[in-house]
Length: 497
Image (cartoon, rainbow, N blue to C red; front, side, top):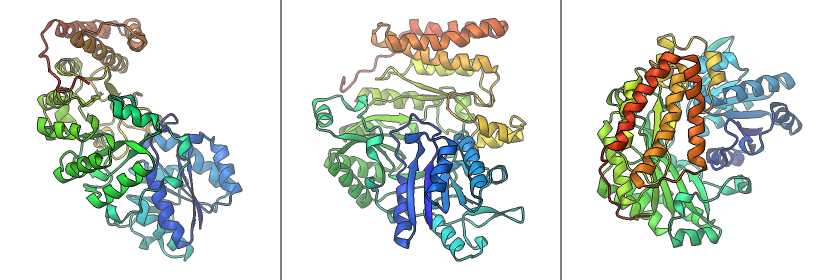
């Protein structure tokens, strides 16, 4: 069978994240006699009509497509137009977008939904179709039969070491952004490697997460990782191809063996990397060991510094653990950009005030934070909560609206939409002020100016449209300004870099 795998251009500016798993499908299916092409539309940003023309002109018999909840609009448009052009083309959809499969398969003309990992399932689907078999015999899929939704039994989880090796030759790497991020370039050696043409890449060495946060999607339970031998082959292969700077986007700080494997091999192959993990696993000894193993940035899901919000998010951590983790990273010289989420059920001015108070107590190396408004993506506890409590009354409208993290789709908080957005932009601006006060760097640059402008627009709209909320906003805003006059315990760095 001739098939094409398409990644939607849901975030067309994100050209550093290569869809390596698409290459796994190619290496699994082509030895079985199938033809597999990969089209990453983040690189090309083809219109729906252009994609349909490509599919029809090249004679593809099957189209595989997927993504996050934000991909719905693209998937719906493509599947409808493709079926109009040629109804015989088989459309298979996978990924997080399939979490509410009952809605998706009714809303889009999809032949098969892969409800889990697809590396094993897709080849079984193709074999069944080619042999005119019964799809009921294929585990891990959803399809329509006589207008009834059929969901087969779960497919077993993949042992990650059984997957094909990462193969950079399946992708047009020149079109991806491999520029080394600035947080890596902090000493002569890393700058030398950059001058010698060494590049940056985004990889995974594990799958899954053992936790169940309110806002996060986990289609498959549990956490699995590559063995040390597999990671070593991967690091060696990347180093040979001049990829010396990696983002390792795994949830892995709670596994000592995996930490030791990554750190040992990063030093062996002179890999410079960043990673992520949970704050409740942080110790100064552990983070210093990670730093000595060429790690220059580590990200934690901070989300909030308010105890009630952390509980409502099911984070299973305390505000003090968030503060401790960030300050330890600062002390040992690791960059950490704290991502915050506002808009969880129960969020109000007091909880945001507590988050601001917690952020004031943290030292950060970069002048940056991230602030997202909670979006109820399909498959999350937030999505289920929204349906049960009546916040989500139109699934189609919600799926169409889901997109960038900064976009407000459903407001679970006790604040108006406009005030919540104003607090979001104030958090960005206040973090920049805090940084300058604590580090005595009072320069006003373009980034600082634009953060102020981004805040002032909704702030002015709040004054015009919601004067009472404007007054209450300012009351809590100015209460928080008193942080600036309170001594903040100075954290001395091991490495001022």
